[in-house]
Length: 608
Image (cartoon, rainbow, N blue to C red; front, side, top):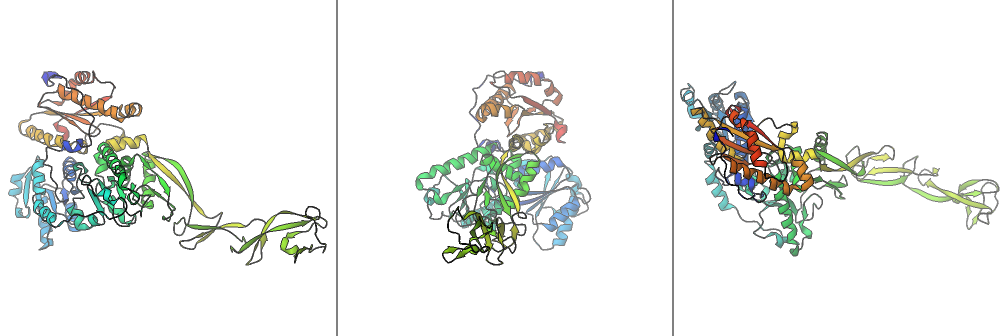
């Protein structure tokens, strides 16, 4: 690249394949410690700052709500319960100081959140005629992420220590295979002990999966799928394997621990390692999402790519999917995902459906087509050759003899005097006779009755992630428009965000430029399909290592999930753009496969 911005260095050997802890390692710049999850309101009119704060705070395990003006902020504060409110001073409609003052005035003695002003206009805030004491802290812009986290998490340590003193270890239920789950190698979230509101906070259930703290969810008591909805409403829990020690949900869980023998601990090990490996490839958009459909995509991805129905006599639908989510929620979301081309389907079976209650539990029976009674009897009917009379055998039977009711002749020899051309049914309730009975359906849940022509049916399918769905799982929402044209903070590793903040401060203060290279790989899916994921990862790692050996020591190369990044300090974007051809030629010369690296260049103005 021009002006020696890229300084050649000696080549290093190819690195090992990317491990499951890569994402966690990228976050090492920000102090890694577990803190109780907090509910935070961010009132900021800049979408970029919103994205930045939401990403950083959610990766620390906090829950974040976003609003864009003062009126929305005040409405959110009055309608919700927040631990911290990060409020921009210069908000549209109502400024941040007025938001804090109005809330405190209305709240009176009621405990409220800590108010933190975020502003580049410190003098304007301090010189405002309003009462600045309504803010507990002030953070200047450009934001220092360490300072933001320090202010937000300042009061967490004492509460966390108090919780730790009262928290007692919970043992697994003594059931077959339970001893296999007491190994210190595994850390479980246990149902129901860890799912109460206080334990939910104490165990840090909103924390990032990057800390590797939990390996699986362990069900110690019988539970319904509806009770497990917390898995889908709490961040990241949908990506943990579920082990059922009770045998109450054999179809919806990932492992039936009630049938696990002590010598089968390898099953748990394989399950946990498989989930860890797949989560390492899953994009953060689907890890921290609140959208149930996107959570379902993430769950399918870490589970192996499929949503599979199984026959289930305990379910009103007579089948269940291999996910701890109720059928109606799955049905609603999967249709939308299919319409978006993220999943494809394969026919499984057709079930009858009660229009009144939605159950598929039917008593299917032969019944009278006149009165609907199931009290019908089947008997042969006879054909008298001489007079051509046909009727049920009971009409001919007189004790041990067969007498034709029409001509009164005795029928002595089968196939000479008569034959039996078929059978007929006769209703014992109304006496109606017919050659074919009707088929009726009675719902065992609500007693609704249907005939064979009126009963509804439901076609059930197994679902697989499509190629587009797999791309979405690995690359996040950025690929949904098919373009890599915009940079999103959600795509940036935390280590890179911290360094970029420092560069933005230098740019605003001294006009010192920088350039950020965002690298995507258009041939990724083709290589993975033909050569396997492992070889693609090795080739990508070698490309990234070549980048590190090419740029200067002070520049930063960071591996993301779908994209990789290079932060060129002191280089203007047009200067970086001019050197891309040379950069690609040097870094791809030793690669076994053509990754199809696409590089986009961004400058300070893109983050203003």
